[in-house]
Length: 102
Image 1 (cartoon, rainbow, N blue to C red):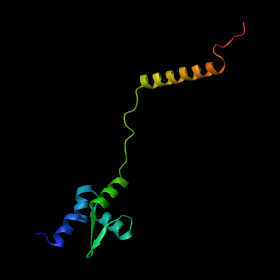
Image 2 (tube, helix red, strand yellow):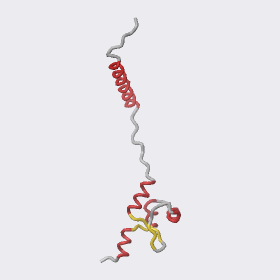
Image 3 (cartoon, one colour):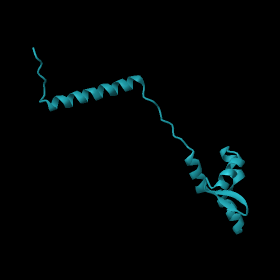
Image 4 (cartoon, one colour):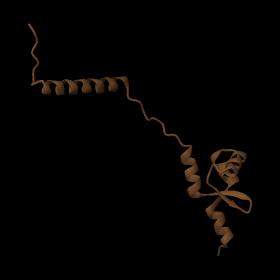
């Protein structure tokens, strides 16, 4: 049977392990913990993170890409469809066909 301290070790990830997993320096993580810039656990003078705190920390610095850009042909087709829709809407407001001066 595990002791409470062993359970805590499973629930709290030590700062050195977080540095190893993320690639961030141990020193910068310590500085951020001391400054209160990031949520953490301070237990007996050592810093650690719960899984939720680590997930939140990673989410804070995660940037999503813009995804795949549409091709020039797709952009042209979209613009053409938008122009046709605009013209159809304009013609329906004016009563159908437009009369041109002869």
